[in-house]
Amino acid sequence: MSEQIDTRADSDLPTILHVDMDAFFAAVAERDDPSLRGRPVVVGMGVRGVVSSANYAARKLGVHSAMPVSQARRLAPNAAFVPVDHARYSEVSSHIMEIFRSVSPLVEPLSLDEAFIDVTGARRLLGTGKEIGALIRKRVEDEEKITCSVGIATSKFIAKLASTYCKPNGMLEIDHHRVLEFLHPLPVSAIWGVGPKTNEELQRLGLRTVKDIADTPRATLIRALGQAAGEHLHELSWGRDYRPVVLDEPDRSVSAAETFSYDIDDPQEILKELLRMTERSTFRLRQKGLKAQTISIKVRFADFKTINRSRTVDQPINSVHECYEIVKKLYLDLKLDRARIRLVGVSLDNLHDAAGSFEQLSLGGREHGWGEATEAMDKALERFGRGSVRPASLLPRKREDESE
Image (cartoon, rainbow, N blue to C red; front, side, top):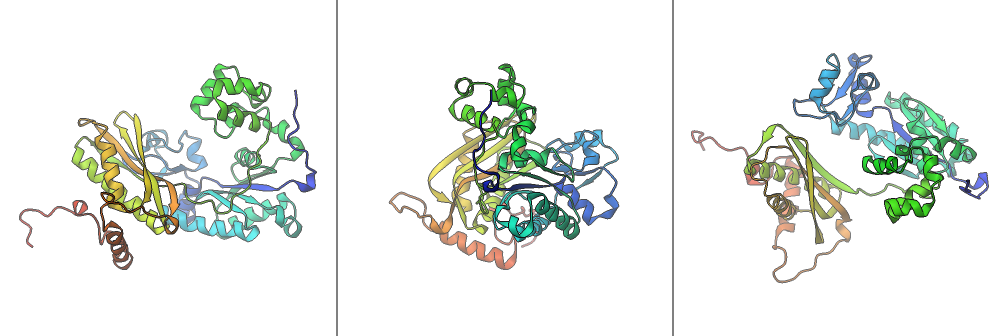
């Protein structure tokens, strides 16, 4: 069984790069501290912390992202454990993205350390996809002293797969005529969007490779997995992905989370931490000129079980007070009765441009004045720095014997 994946002439097909930094956080740490070179490096600290990144020497010892730091220390006792430094990663990332944009204006960042680049329009000036990929890799290494891997294809899906299969510090181009030759032997988990549950269902159906999915009738996949998932898998199994590179795709979410140094069961302490997370995330939201329409919380228990709850409001919001009122209710509605909690987080989703959003004024609606108060607070924060203005309940408690 075979299907055409595209009928366009080769010269009419796009050239898309997926550029992915190699162990980005760890690589930045090694660059900034040369004494770390040649050692296993793990980004993440604290008894209750989780691994944010690990270099390839640490990965060979079994360390991987999202693993508890305590487990990573058992696997790699001689590794260097370094703290997370988001400000530094953002700074390096901005330099890398400028390198990408100097090659083509069509850059779609996926995160701090990876992006799609449509270089179709740059081919006449800079050469083939491989030549452009080599140029980017050289500039990243020369200017930022870190390495990256580059996948090259006519679609985003295949380009991302190619970069995955040439890591670390490699480059792989999948010619349009070789897409199925490359794609079909891969495990089903290689397909974009196949998580543990979908993978389990595909295995139950006896579908283990991408070719197995491609050879399964579309209707069968839809019956087993649902309309959206069935269609998605069928298209990608034949290498069909016509999504364009989206220029500077807007933020989808702003969030903050905290892992406690010990399990907490005091509801007031947990609510205080949720307020702190709300303050942090709403400040970032306002800095970006955004408002959120969906507010979510994450609660992880001592046994690592995690639950999420969310609420979508009629009008987008971005003040600490308005968002925290929703966060607080979402938490109290869980009725946890002093359950031991390891982590809490707040996520602001369904984002809108603050300048383009509007508020419907009505009697009995939102409490008046929070917009003005928030604006005044942000001006003070800009002038005096973070922490200069904050909710009273987050201020350190004064000891009874402390003088005024």
